[in-house]
Length: 282
Image 1 (cartoon, rainbow, N blue to C red):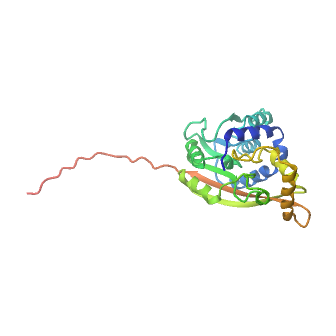
Image 2 (tube, rainbow, N blue to C red):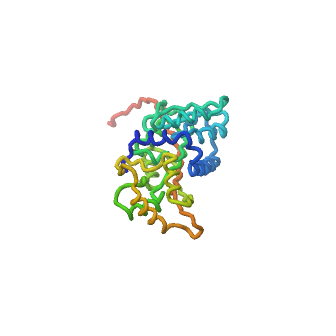
Image 3 (cartoon, rainbow, N blue to C red):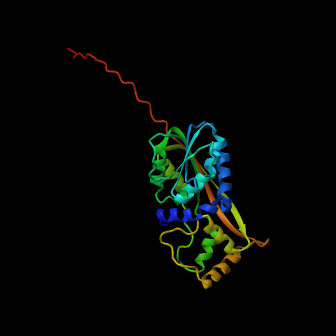
């Protein structure tokens, strides 16, 4: 899959105004990330929310760690605009438009980096995790969620019955994500996965929801143009085989969770110079 950051920013900006109304999956996953975070014995002074969207998680971070300074970035200007509208006058969050691959922060600045369902939109995970490591303090925590390759498997398989074009975003396997975290010089990495299934009465309901949150197909190599009635009917027919006995259509999401710590670094040795006389034996 080839991801175009300009297309991603445009897609999510267009969805920003009503994003929280439709982002049920994102909010459910966020609650699970916060549950994992609650087990960590940390008291961060400086927090970064990467891919903050409309600020849903940023506000929770501000509430959870009341004395902390929270900064939040998103690639989509429309999302940052909405986030600024939603924040409290008394609990200010530093929102700004920025790319997670080129963060506008100093080295070793944050004690905690939080990211909910954003990593999957990054085209170069090696670069992304290296940049997150750069701005995280030694001993700091990175905690995140992302999507795995079985996400929207029903829609993906149904499209394969219609044509060979790319219609559904492809996501990266949990083990590959974990390897990239390790390669970025984090330690004590823990990865796990979850399957969350949303249900719909109709296929068009699912597709409207995906568009409403900006998460429809944003592969730069996707087939462009409107979906014709004929193809939609074929797709609808193919998806029908997944309908449950209760009448609902499932939409499966493979959710990947990860957390890791930035290495503390090796203490510098205190070197001393000693003069040693060596006598040549007679």
